[in-house]
Length: 133
Image (tube, rainbow, N blue to C red; front, top):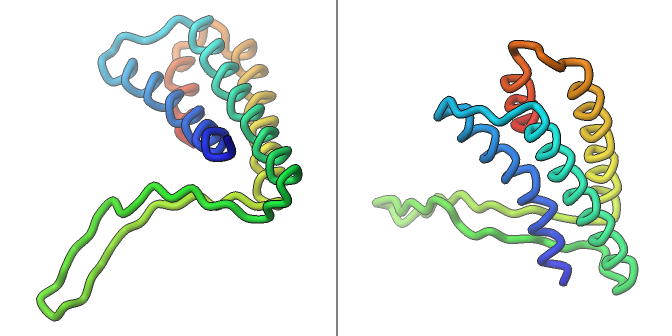
């Protein structure tokens, strides 16, 4: 259960980046309402998953959890040296509340920006870059 929640914490913003980025790349921009709804959904899912991770960590007594996505690049040199690029996400009782704070701040910013930037020409570009960062 903890692994599923950890994957949701990482996947929610990643799916938002893909959705907004691919739509922008192919010049088929989403409507303002659809963009705002997608941002709210991604932030909400990420925040709820973060809360679930924290509750699960406290409930099971786990202080540290690692989500290992494996080696993405692995190079073997002529001298026997190995270079690898591993992707790991570490969750602990300090990083999870900070991630929750980040999701809350992103939710507040996206809610404000959705109203403030209504009918602005750079609306889609702002939210695409917002999702990336």
